[in-house]
Image (cartoon, rainbow, N blue to C red; front, side, top):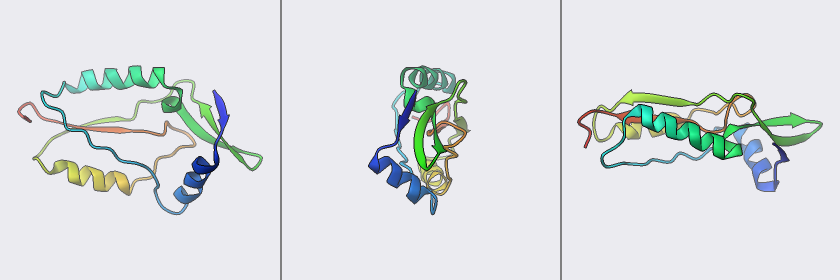
Length: 117
């Protein structure tokens, strides 16, 4: 898949050059599945949605979404310390740039503990 970025997408690329510019979402699950199930689900989602397996290429003054042949799955599983642990993860994610030229434009950090809920 190759598609040139639209106007808003190009604006995001420009803004990201000066400071990390991305969206962080938080999802709290009751009866959360074990990490291996979440990893498998993300792999399936990535296969079904081409932009989750894409990077941004810059050629001849234009930016394009370009599919990665074997995209890595950016998934981290961390033990959940307490009910507020997610705050620290969000703060870290907001300040961490995504290398959109060589990796998929998403990543997942899963806080999980056997007795979390």
